[in-house]
Image 1 (cartoon, rainbow over the protein chains, first blue to last red):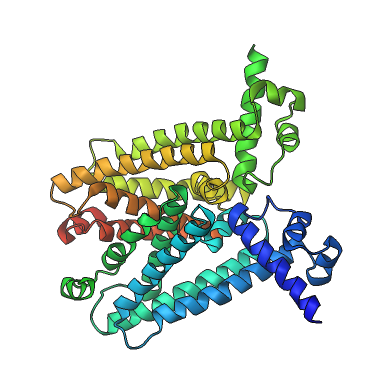
Image 2: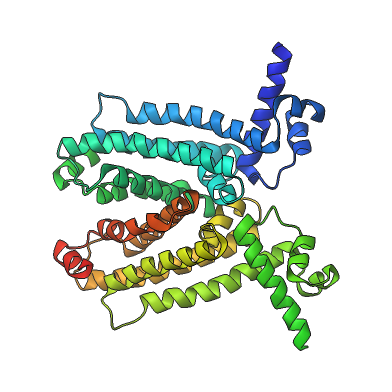
Length: 207
Length: 207
């Protein structure tokens, strides 16, 4: 049983790395199994299809990222806007570390698969919608808190949160395109602008 | 000779539609030729490789889109900020028309291929960089004009232009994910916020 679950983990890990590097469509089950060092026959013991594997990779990746986002956004000791800033810094550091280990900025797996696949497989589209909804909700909670404290002025906190996540995805796209994480540095100022943060608060938090 | 260039156009058109629907990696030369109604043998008469075809599709698509962007952004009769607004409305209308004809929002081909391919083929990465650089430059020119007229306040107009294009790409990603072009409606307000547009000008242009 130990060996069995080990093979599943190996397949998941290999698929995660390969999807991050080359997307989903370019991969075959045989290649994933070869990279995982498991016989191809065992693949279908764990996963019904390549799509089922992709869903499992998405779930596992979101589980890890959700914990990272929660650490950045839900630490009650820090001011709400500083927590958003921490999320951007953490995202940039993560992309930077990935670039150092594999030579290129791989971007955001959720954004990558959204643009590659959302029109092709409905189960993957639905899962990606749930993940982005959850991201927007986490950011929304922080913006609502800042709004309550009079630190930002937005019409609808949910729409504002979606715009912040859209800016994040757009700058991550540029970081991948130019293989340069410096693009993420614009996020903090842009977030303050999108939220109409009050200049006094901006100065206090930026310093 | 008429027939020859006709076959090249047919291959380009078929590849364009298929790449828009399913990306690049999922396609094979045989499938493209079948959709184009040309014998597979003739493919390599016109294109050295599938990558060469993708570069030709990108060039052709950018040539058309550059004209659209120029029409929206370079009409000297309108105020600079209204021209940016026209670009967003035109983008939304284009995605909407595509959705009506094929059932799904296909997104931005340049954004799609950036996230799918920029780490896999350097020639495609370089071409996409040129295209996004050109987009940013076109938006930069308009922002610089608005800045000169005192209608916006940004530090660096080039950085501001990149943030506007990042916001556009991020919202197009959501439009594709949710198959809903309504996400593009946020672009105008977000652009004004990103550019710190003066409230009086915002009111004048929004009304």
